[in-house]
Picture 1 (tube, rainbow, N blue to C red):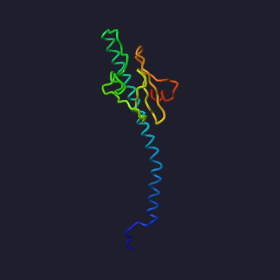
Picture 2 (picture 1 turned 180 degrees about the horizontal axis):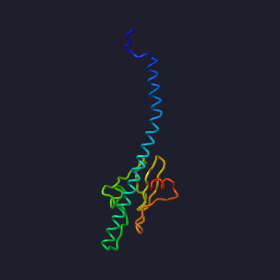
Picture 3 (picture 1 turned 90 degrees about the vertical axis):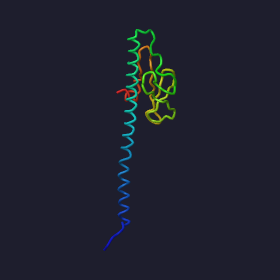
Length: 141
């Protein structure tokens, strides 16, 4: 018998197999994407802190009485005084987006409904979040 097409049973089996594979693959992909966003946020935090140290050292070496009062000029291009490429502020609350809440306070979104607030203290050159928040500890590892 010369068979030139698939039977209905073969098509149903193939579609079922694809469905099972997608059921397993999609959650793993979403989890890996969330980890990627968190790693990106951690990198931003490290770069900001390194930039603060670099700029504070410039003031110390110049024996200047002034210090780094703010990390940026406006609320659109964040951290422009300490990063070579500033982070563009976003108010859409997507994962990984930053926004400026006050003169020295910044919010980073780590999920659609969760964010962590970081504060900059010009007297100590520190860029920290509330360590009582478990999300802060995850980002600052």
